[in-house]
Image (cartoon, rainbow over all chains, first blue to last red; front, side, top):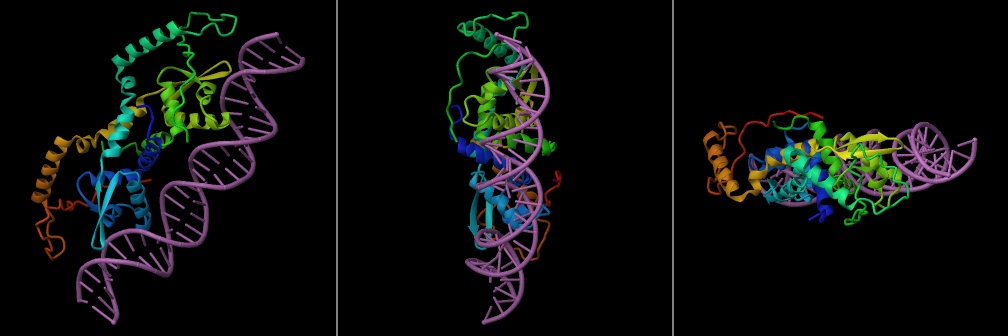
Length: 144
Length: 144
DNA sequence: AAATCATTCAACCAATCGGTTGACAATCAA
DNA sequence: TTGATTGTCAACCGATTGGTTGAATGATTT
């Protein structure tokens, strides 16, 4: 599952990287809102708000339904769920008990696979217990 | 808890909005990496990679320890946890059963509190069951 | 038909982004 | 000391961002 649909993630995270847009999403959490209603709390022009809304829309975070002359927006949680899932991968790192275990496992793993005799001199003091990067040279996946 | 520390969230989500940086984080998930090691999978200059790493660092997503001439980076999951928590607010929207319930509750709530007779004309067709924005004018918190 | 309302569009602006190159600083190996 | 190695810094570049203003579009009201 590692980092497919990267372009989507870019747009979603980028959309979330702005406080104005996050507040708009938050407003939409309690129901539909027109563009004007979404714009109202902010001291920016309606055009600027409209752009923010378009960013949210193209990120798939909201959907728009044109009712007469007003555009009604509602949340689409799909991309939020994706972002949430992406972050969940790192959950073990902030879940401390698991993190400690995982760390041990990683180090053990590193110790098992460690460097297949790369450079001649084993200048390893062996004391500090540095995890020592596993020699596998990092798979490539997403390319821009 | 609604959208405090907004500046942090900006930098974190912005940092996550780039595939290169996400892949760097992913690499760090399996252990420490030097700047060079982090840069290696990418076809960009070391300087560019260094900038990415600095973005991650100032977002608090990684920490750096200078060992001799090499800078060793490791993940700091704190901000990831924050982002995850922020997204969790919307969890009910993609958890369908809960979503349906919540929706009902919201509508019920909206019906109970509905507009304290704002504009004169009750042009409400009352048929479509639109949630009807609660008249509370959206609390302001974060200001850029 | 005219006015008003809700919203987008187009052009512009300054700031930021992601990238480059070349110079620099520091550490380590010879 | 000389020379790699590891990484940052500074200057620059084109593209994108978030904002503005003014005009244009479309639906509703009068």
